[in-house]
Length: 217
Image (cartoon, rainbow, N blue to C red):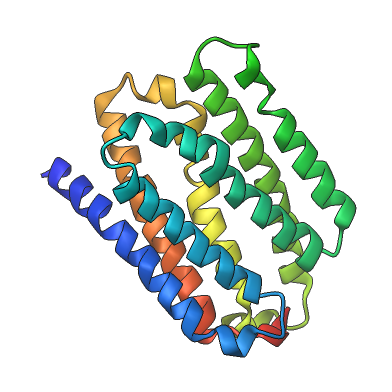
């Protein structure tokens, strides 16, 4: 039962991402004069990254870890650092600090540690903690905004909630992956949460295009 549900979530995720990409492209004309057009590009790029991993690397599964470690995941963190720090919080210095610290977290890949899973946990944890900081700063900004009651029209509201659910919610799963892997029940439960949170995040991104207004942020 649980394995079937996990398989179902694995099969549907790529199509939820595809839906988000299609909706993003449909709403691109409304966003072409705002920086949210780059969010459209991001959504489409993420779908292509996932599609290439799923089908392009189908017969080379061992390469997927490098595809995500050195491209797929860094693209996500660096884009959100830019979106939060530069565009929403108007703090270029914060963006560069987050970027440099995140890049430095990859140094263990070059020989400081031998176990790849330790290195993976380090870079992902550092990247996620930095993103968590930006999410909290954004949350405080939204709470103090005079337009807080119009959150339904706020693009960044949907993005922020999606990020909190997925990236922050799954931080322990990747940070302590080696330990969680030793407990089959815990791993299965957390993996389902990881997949559900991923679905919810992209549905919230889709909702941002449908209900959000680009002039709200």
